[in-house]
Image 1 (cartoon, one colour):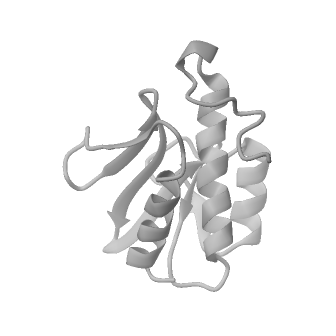
Image 2 (cartoon, one colour):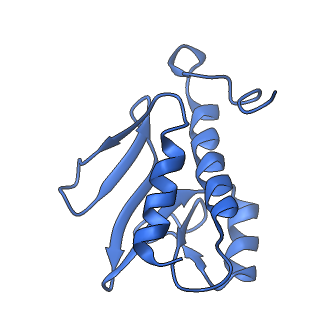
Amino acid sequence: MDGTELQARAAARTQELPGAELTHPFGDDWDVYKVSGKVFMLFSQVEGTNVVIVKSAPSDAKALVEGMEDITPGYHMNKKHWITLNPGGTGLDEQLVDDLVTESYLLVLEKLPRRLRPVDPETFGQV
């Protein structure tokens, strides 16, 4: 998956997340996805490569960074809570990208007051 495909896949997943919106508070070079005004995903270029930056639980972030060459600490973000998805390797597939975007969204939802949540993070996605 190249950088354009990676960002397209992550953006497509946001279309399925209630209340997700694309904003550009840092200019046109940064796509910032928010839910109820809180950031859960960013797109940018790092050294000419399109990347996706998502929130992650600290223990998950550490394991992902240590276990996958395509995942590095969050670019320009808190390295404990954010990770960067990098294109070009073999570790990132569509399902993992979907899962990481969804997890980021849910982590942000959990911290929001109930009245601001478009869905319940504990039951979202359950049949």
